[in-house]
Length: 383
Image 1 (spheres, helix red, strand yellow):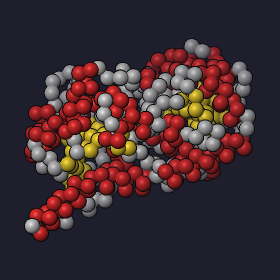
Image 2 (cartoon, rainbow, N blue to C red):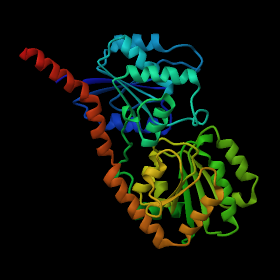
Image 3 (tube, rainbow, N blue to C red):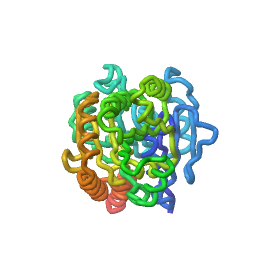
Image 4 (cartoon, rainbow, N blue to C red):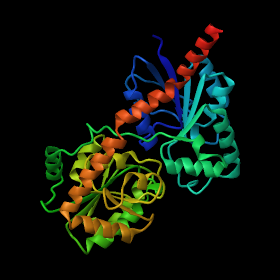
């Protein structure tokens, strides 16, 4: 049986949530049914490789290098995909190129907002986005909040923007007492230490600065509490300087850099914090919940849809350092509450946000065009 050829288009293959979700999709789809090609706008790194997936790059080194439509059209004519799936604003021109070249099924999805447009897009961008949404066969977002956001921005019915949540590998991300003991021993933590952690790209939109302000408040009140920030990005040097200049932070905050095994770090944590100013649907939050961690998150994006207040964690307003500090202090002082929230978090992920559930949704998404084609062909045959 001929495999369905899908070209996934996105701006770059980095360490963000969009890229992580894409990696999970191409790794999880049935290789006997689907052929996956990833096309990036930005150059690929020399060592970039994804098993079983072909990588192509337009090698654009700047966002201000003109239209992508011609380059993408040539790619689609050469590769003849059955499906083109573009992600986020940086790749949305793939919708136009796919329409011009007669690609049978065109999909565009929204996975979040950057800090410059999290409150709204410029009017030219809104016009072009609305045009592309109309040209695509399917539009979806990873959370109800994101779907509502773009529907409101563009003046369209939110029902036209489907919701397909992210999913997490609950076999990889789970609580493991051996892994926890090993990691905490490696870190040299005292037995009663409370490790508060966050995982994510060090980007202004993730607002690690607010977490540092919360850590300063906690340093004088509970010396057991230590904070680990796992990740890398443009804010790394700024955050490191901030820590070094504060005696309180130097004693309790550790910038751990990027890790290929976040599941090890999550097992070392007692509490997970996500202080973002904007989110789509955070993969790292799902991973933390799957690891049975109580979570303190800001009221942005899908965070309130994932974290149920007083059941799996706490939700505070963005930039509320005192609110974050208070919830951390409460959880640090109550091990039974941490355990209860953690169990509930794991149950919620298993029920609603598993990787298998996400892959089933994507399989239906990509094969919908196939089904429609077969029905149309059968109708013509009967006529």
